[in-house]
Amino acid sequence: MSRPLVVAHRGASGHRPEHSEEAYRLAARLGADAIEPDVVATRDGVLVLRHENEISGTTDVAARPEFFSRRTTKEIDGETLTGWFTEDFTWEELSQLAVRERLPRIRQASATFDGQLGILRLQDLLDILDETGLQMVLEVKHATYFASIGLPLDELVASELRARGWASTPERLVVESFEQDVLRRLRARDVAARWVYLLEEGGAPADAVASLGSAAPTYASQRTDEGLAAIAAQGFDGVSVDKRTLLQDGREGVRATDLVDRAHAAGLQVFAWTLRPENRFLAKAFRRGPLASQWGAWMQEWDVLIGAGLDGIFADHPDLAVFAADHASGTGRAR
Image (cartoon, rainbow, N blue to C red; front, side, top):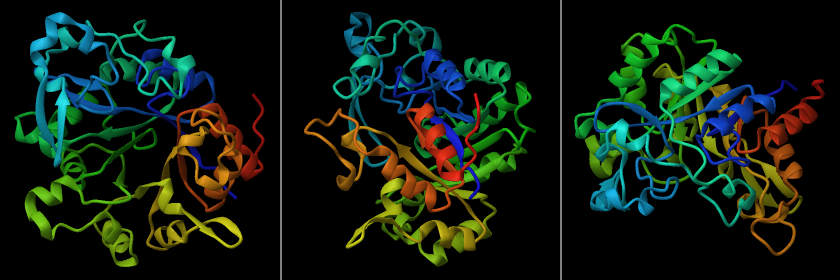
């Protein structure tokens, strides 16, 4: 069996606060093949690396009195959120904030780094990638929303990639999104990459809902044979799916669904997210002990997933993912 690509999800985010310089550099040291950043924009059009544009859970913004007045409520992709949003700050303002662990009760060791590291821009990560030689799996977040407020992420991302020589490196660049439209627009801007469409377990894509309303196709419908064939026909190279759609619990224990085989039959590569060792994130059959923060039988779950034939895996602990990928494929890479 071939070895899947190991993608450090927001860097080594199981060990350090996500999207921080230390998370990215540690991912490289731990053997990841690629790093996955999430990209959102500031008010002045700077691309910054945050999982969401609402940043109260991953920075110290709520403790900064000079920014109290920026707290607001917005609707982002159909969800009402209250907090602080990147598009209401300039890069100069955001650069004053410190990042913090998003899951402090689960990852207490990582939380000890709170307040020590700052927010990064996409250009800062590109410096690290140029230094380490790793690949990048770039996720474009909330593109329809940002376009609606005059911040077209396809234009901003394409400009940044061209300026840094990354727009013509498909061997090192994967671009992904939960919205097909932004991927098509980026491709039309002559960005050479591998294009991966993200599929949530439930719901419907924001770009389709914005244009079609209740007639928008659901993510579930796009995982059917017909849906996968349509994704491939539109020129996408792969899909990336919630690992829960790859696991089924039967009489013989937890087994893989046929989703990977069906996607491969349609000509698509398949990535899965997110592999995590803590009980909170494991299928029930693999949980061990009473605490959500305890590590369960993560290797058993990951063996099922990797054994399904995945082309890539996203993991918060890239060291564990490298070990599991090497074990499953029989490569046993020396370090």
